[in-house]
Amino acid sequence: MRTEPDIATVARAIGEPARAAMLLQLMDGEAHTARRLATVAGIAPSTASSHLRVLCASGLVHVADAGRRRLHRLAGPEVAQLVEALAALAPPRLPGTLQPVPPTDALLAARICYGHLAGQLGVDIAVVLRKDDIVPSLEPGETGVVRTFDHPLLAALEITGLEPGRAGVRACVDWSHGTTHLAGALGSALLSGLLAAGWVRRRPAGRALRITAAGRERWAELGF
Image 1: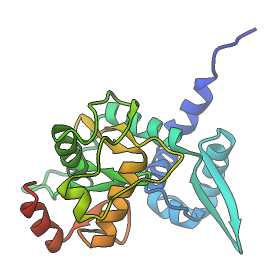
Image 2 (image 1 turned 180 degrees about the vertical axis):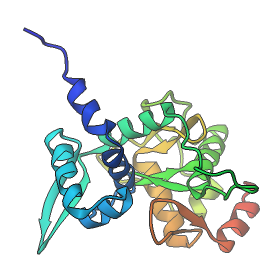
Image 3 (image 1 turned 135 degrees about the horizontal axis):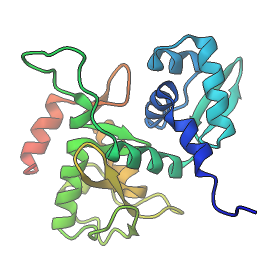
Image 4 (image 1 turned 30 degrees about the horizontal axis):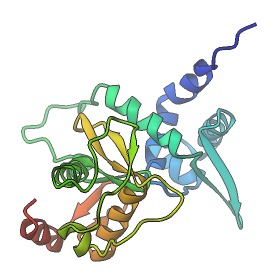
């Protein structure tokens, strides 16, 4: 009798391109309809429903009724960690045609990673807070505590405490930069603070964030 975990089932669920695209969209931490996920994956809504059934059956996605709509979310933070780790191992997708000046990929600059900040901005903040001894140096997946809230960035974002019941800080693999950014309660507080302060804005679609003019000014003032 086999007692090893059945990782093949999960791998098959993730390994289909349309389902992988849906999972990446759900990394924004929001709930989405099948129609919205179909658009992201470039498939028909009727086809999306069958793909979402596979993701739900494999424990990767949860679905809940909200009035007449059925909304889909990642099943939990462990799924987000799995997707981000796979993204770090995956080869980049190259454009189908050569372009003289490739467009800047907004995902690389700043994006949402299941409720916290990722991309170059997330990595930069992690580097500064580690250097200033606000958070410890952690290996991917390790958790730690926030040593103090006495820091100019945290003060500017009005972060004086954290949501109870969660790890203060967790090192999350950043697939786009080959290092880690900050997850956990502090990571969520940073993202919420940046959005509330207007330093970053959500884009109309996807999980990339736009750094605003006000945000760039404040980053410069803080020495980023």
